[in-house]
Amino acid sequence: MSTKLGTNRARVSPAAARPEETYLAMVWRRFKQHKLALISLYVLLVLYAIALFAPMLATHEYTAVAPANRLLEPSAEHWFGTDDIGRDVYSRVIWGARISLSVGIVAAAFSVAIGTIVGAVAGYFGGRVDDILMRITEVFMAFPTFFLLITVAAVLPRSIFNIMVVIGLTSWPGLARMVRAEFLTLRERDFTEAARAVGAGHARIISRHILPNAIAPIIVSTTLRIGGAILAESGLSFLGLGVQEPFPSWGNILNRGRSFYLHAPWMMMMPGLFIFITVLAFNFIGDGLRDALDPRMKQ
Amino acid sequence: MYRYILRRLWQMLFLLIGISIISFSIMHLAPGDPVDMLVERNAPQAVKERIREVYGLDQPIYVQYGRWVSKAVQGDFGKSFVSGEPVMKMILDRLPNTLYLNLVVMVLIYAIALPVGIISALRQYSKLDHAVTFMAFMGQSMPPFWLAMLLIYFIAVPVDFIKTSGMASYGINIRESPFLIVLLDRLRYLILPAFVMVFGSLAGLARYMRASMLEVIRQDYVRTARAKGLSERIVNYKHALRNALLPIVTLVGLELPILFSGAFILEVVFSWPGLGLVMMRAIQQRDYPVVMAFNTIGATLMVCGTFLSDMLYLVVDPRIKYE
Image (tube, rainbow over all chains, first blue to last red; front, side, top):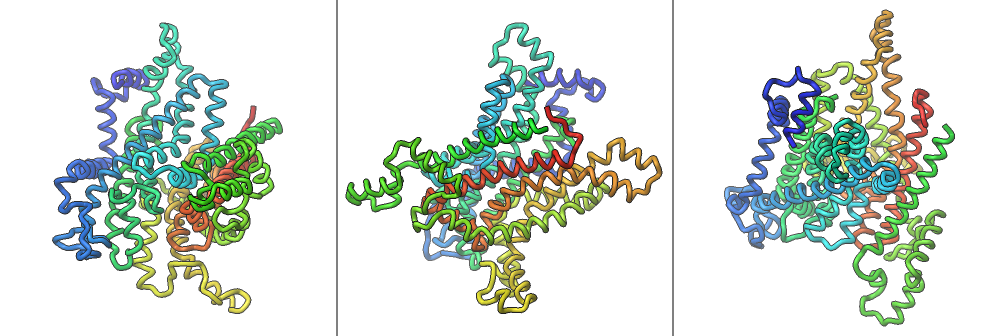
């Protein structure tokens, strides 16, 4: 995939590319110039490490209830304090990283998969297929996102998997339209014609010839979507429709803190801070990738 | 052009049918029998049948859909499963409060964002420009309800003047109190929710204005104007700005659904007596007629808003051609 892009790119601007520089190397070189994106990348690596090593980093059992220790201030024993039933907020936030970050990635993956497939099929085949798919996309787009999100979340049983599906199902239309637009232009290009001439099937042309050339905006959009999905989960959890206790997600820790925030503000501050920093990091990385992947996309 | 308008109207009809189907299927997507929402689960079968009949749930699904749609287009979304009140009345009762909050916020956002966006375009890469960009990222990334709670904790608690729940003090109204007192009272309640909402989308709109302005500034006619020796002020504000505002004008149409649904989650945080609380309660109680009405109205407004926006484009920008 990367080699194909590399040759393609080199043809577009032979002078701009340094000799022997692969496409990935160029992307990385350009990405590094976006300082905030680079910092965000390191921040995210730390966050994912936290999620990965949660069992080692947590100081307490995240479900361990201790009524005697309820609503304790942050201290050496409980770094982020305790919640209203005496659970250690730090340990819950650490474990919550696992759930929140997974929800973000899986939900974004659903959204991107649906959006890309719908957009690719509509843009590649055009005509009637395009008409029908785009009308359906527009119908989904018409609903205020958050209305549809909470409605479907309220209707379905509240498992973590369902939360991921719901967020994915309500956030694909924008991407579908974008991918369709890319496909509409790319399918007219010479290399598509060439692939067709040597007898490649539709599926092969879509996935091996057109998609790699449309991948840049999809990657950017995926990055932004992971952040968006984490924010959506927090919003759902805030209304009690997200990940359900005893599993900790940043959203539901925050939601629990909502009832006590005047007396125990640490309960809502820390998970909120983690959500904010994570989403901010994804947004900066998306911005950095936009500049790095495709110079034409830069304003 | 009329063919274009007709085609758009035709598409709109299609969209509205799609919206109604999805809104309607929400209730039937739910696991379990809607009748169980209305009566005790172990109520006698005869009672259940009676309820089913009253609500028309005994009919085939396409008949139910037909009935629902034909009433919905007349503005009748049935009665709440929980309170028995007409859904439309529940919405209309609370709508003014929601519109009031959203309108104030919208005016503030446009009043601040447009000048800020223009200036950051004219001084690209200045400190202000960078600050706007950074603000836009912050506004996009921060959960609004979290910001709201932080503000309540750090500002509203120490400062007595600022209220955190409701929208007016009991007994202070325009008939009995002096205007200034009423204004101050409303301000106490408005300041926090409005601030959070303005913070969330201010910089985003400013960036949009900036992008539009930057695009126009690079155009030939702007360079020509400058070459003619016109002053910077006239070039920027007369030649460039007028054209840069065109995309902004069309945004007005897209604000239509936002007026209805924009403040939802913050209304819950600040106990604002608007539609957010109604929808929230309906969601929690699985009051499907209310939920269906909210989704249908929200989506319909979006479709109308998009149409309005396209029509505005047609009016303000004669360069656009339609096939």
